[in-house]
Image (cartoon, rainbow, N blue to C red; front, side, top):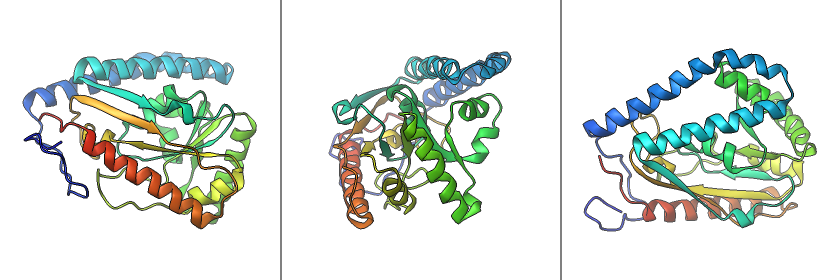
Length: 261
């Protein structure tokens, strides 16, 4: 909703509110505590020599702690809808990407996700090393066709291990209500894996804006939508995926209260 309580018009040019001193303070406290926790966790990297399950358990504990900090310091909580659409076995998760929030939350919402991510992220001390040990799918975006081949090869291995492969079809974070730019890589992955694809809509960008250090109080909604069965041609798949994600994401943004600045 708009600041005056009126519904936000569909297709509006969304802009985050100006952050108040309290929002800035709360955001800085949250960021400071996250950085401090990473420093404290540095000696624990030796545990990464143990089986991946140990790193996975530790990562889930740390991420849950960060999400609790986010709620306590910033006043930003989250709600999950549509869990019934998640299949029991491996699948492809194609999620809208508006902030760093979903890269955290999906790690604890899903059973054993394997994220498609930029290779550079695995070089970040502690957090990046954990991404590598968790068996996420690191891709060199400058490698051209070989990057797609590597993506498909690694994704097939994760599916064989009964994991959920998570991809952000637009490749980068988007601003709420901005025009979508879905990339063909998600269709290639869908065709190669031959598993259902679960679209994900969300409104995280309303409260954790792209390219902003400030986070606003409220409730983020992450919604799993009805699965797209395996076997569709690329064109119909992409059309269905984009329609489901974009229509529901816009509805969630309209539903969200404007964060208080």
